[in-house]
Length: 146
Image (cartoon, rainbow, N blue to C red; front, side):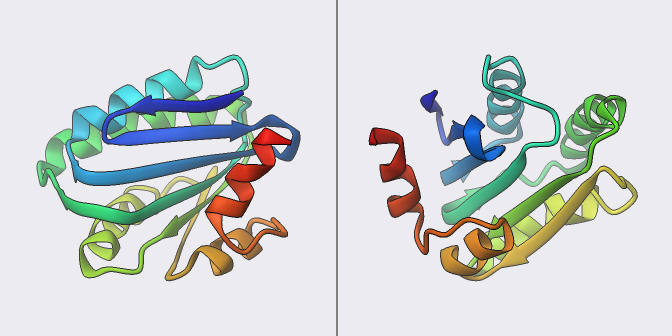
């Protein structure tokens, strides 16, 4: 358990909640997402069907190679379809660039029934959709210390 950092992506798994929090920041390259995802799914606390909260608040730009992106998503989809579980993915996207990036992710999940993607403007709304009592990610992350 704890913070796993793969620049510019980091994730924290809350196994007792069935939740993973992913944070993107800075300029995001497709390979960064692929590496972070492979690290996540090979983590001992990974379980298929975990809910995901993806914070894109601090994204400043992203690689716009949509063909490579769709190839990456296709590989991820194969793993998700094999699990037969549905996963709720909530993107926090309060800025124009974060909304643009989250829209790319949402479009890639359109025909995948095992992923339910939602986009929210605030951490509080995203956490509430995922059934979490905390109103901010900082408060949620502080629960790891307890």
